Image 1 (cartoon, rainbow, N blue to C red):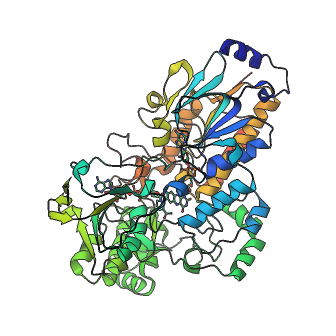
Image 2 (tube, rainbow, N blue to C red; image 1 turned 135 degrees about the vertical axis):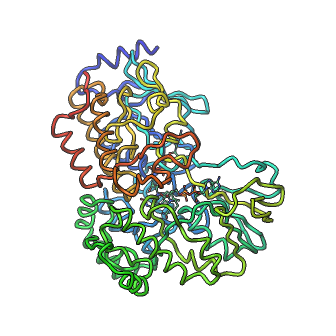
Image 3 (cartoon, protein in one colour; image 1 turned 180 degrees about the vertical axis):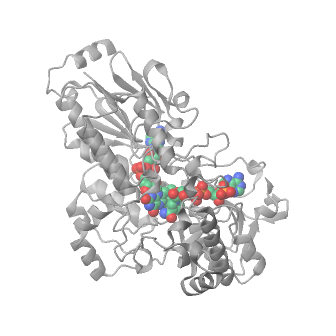
Length: 561
Ligand code: FAD
Ligand code: NAP
């Protein structure tokens, strides 16, 4: 059957789309994942007339915002900016209620987009993709799902998410725990009532830091098991006024243009953190005296070092900023031992993903909250009634794992992806992910990765990066279709050069400091190769490079008829 189909496809006359001669499970494009990336990819490709299907493991759209329903979940980018820009009508119609919207509102937005653009009719939900194999003879992808169905397509687009595979550390004894265990990234849809419950939470990354204040308000007692304290800044979140929304809407063209040209896809526009404009750091912290630094901390709290450029470049200046951070922290926490326990040490500010919180530190002044600083003695095991550590046993009725994700490569490597010569993505990436622009992998023709490793991705406002990748991929597919090009894949040399560039740009930054252990480096997953995965060059620079490559006739790519 496939011989016949392959022949049919290869010989089809110019200008006729494959979809003209397809059975139910044959598509031009299979997109995997229906988060913001997969949703926009579907919308964009529909306009080309290609036959597209989206396969999604969840039961509805939204991806991250569908799965992460833990108390306190919200975005930490202003919602006027963390939203689609592709439809002017959509952005004019939608009202965000707060500077940084909570998960329920973002999920409603995703659902609204799905309704508005009738996306669901081309999305197959409750469908997890198990394998995707490139059929060289027919230059097609053969995709198998866990329910035993197979799909054939010419293009395979991975919109599987950078933070969609949860990391659940294997803590001995967890199977013997009498109470429920939750993961923030797989939160029950019906919610969890923690009233009169003693809760333990493991992990103090962005998810833990968001959940802790909200759970503490409800629970009988909350015990926080913290392995590494984080540097976290207050969000100053607040409701948006209609005047403000109107002003932003009137300026949307400029806001979007500035986002696209920026470093991180965020511009602020007075509706950034607490109404304070984002500042371009220019000063030198090392030129300040201890008295000047103390004064800055007194006047500006955690914002005291935000105007200093050398904090991000010079380890000594960075350590000065860390000390300023700790000084301010000590003024917030009433119990000196708890304050010491919360103080991050021995790694730089800016190595891990910045955390933005609401009332995080204030929560540790509550009577029903206990901090267990695991630096003083780690977790030994989970028992039937709680958590045993080297510092003693802590009784809890329920446990929350806020332990993060197998980021960037996790969702891709969970699928058995095989390219040319049957080579698997795991083999290709055994020493770390290798891509050209984070968009394609050598040896895997016509497969695209949205916000893949090697692109700005998780270092940016992801909506900006998602839209840029989707637009680029759709234009690329349009180009291939228009020119009867059968397949595109990057040259090996282009991949090598790009990886070299990604590493060069990251060198010397706090992201790659020797004392830094972040999920950007894969350091949170035992055995994962330590390599800095996203591209630090900025979304503006990166976009220009992607556009130049197209203007150069897809330089670095092989296009085969
Ligand atoms: P996802 O939303 O992760 O969607 C991927 C989808 O693919 C999922 O629905 C998943 O079920 C599906 N999938 C994966 N594998 C398979 C498979 N094998 N078969 C079928 N389906 C599959 N970014 C920001 O820029 N700002 C923020 O404030 C922000 N806050 C965040 C808060 C949390 C709690 C988390 C976890 C992430 C946050 N992010 C934030 C990052 C966020 O992931 C992105 O902003 C964005 O939502 C990613 O969209 P996506 O479509 O690329 O991936
Ligand atoms: P994370 O940043 O990886 O944090 C995981 C936490 O769990 C860390 O504190 C880690 O400690 C701890 N941990 C892991 N295994 C442990 C173990 N065996 N014992 C004790 N502690 C353990 O994960 P996350 O908080 O889910 O955030 C992941 C990313 O999702 C964020 O960086 C961000 O990009 C995104 N996110 C964004 C928001 C937002 O504000 N919009 C909210 C949530 C998530 P160590 O540091 O010691 O490893």
